[in-house]
Amino acid sequence: MATFDRTVVIGVLVLCSVLCTAYAAETNDVNSGFDGDLTEGRTFGHHFLKRISFAMIPAAFIVGVITTLLSALTVVSMKGLGVGVILLVLTISQVIARSFPAPLPPPVPVAYSAPAPAPIPLVYKDW
Image (cartoon, rainbow, N blue to C red; front, side, top):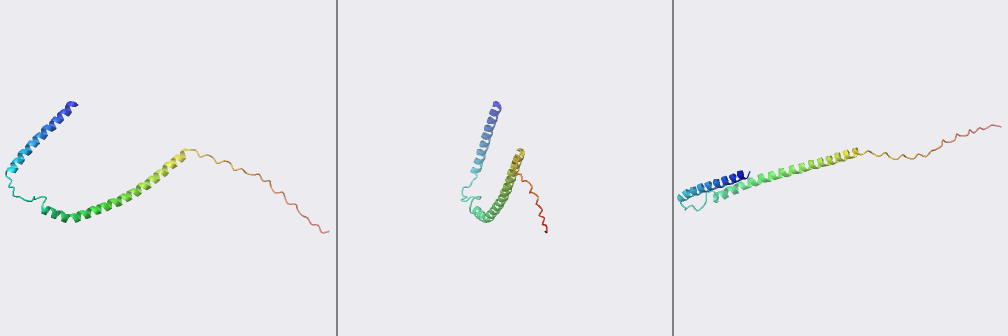
């Protein structure tokens, strides 16, 4: 394994040295034909800043729209996550409650009440 690592490191160093040598040779060729009277770069000069200023407003609008949509999506996702967590907690508590046997309630003491005595018939005689 160590020989493989050493081989990879040596290969990377050789590749870097070859690329650096090629780049140095190319820049020497390019700089020899350079005039030197160019005062402003073509890429990042006045025209570049003007183009960027024109593109800034649409880019800011698009970034604002994307931010708003992502915020709305986040709110909706969080709401769904909240409902899901509540349902999960209720389900877990229901499973735990059903796994334990429910104790029977203590019997309610009932007082014995004797039946009411029968009414005595009142008989009125006419004498």
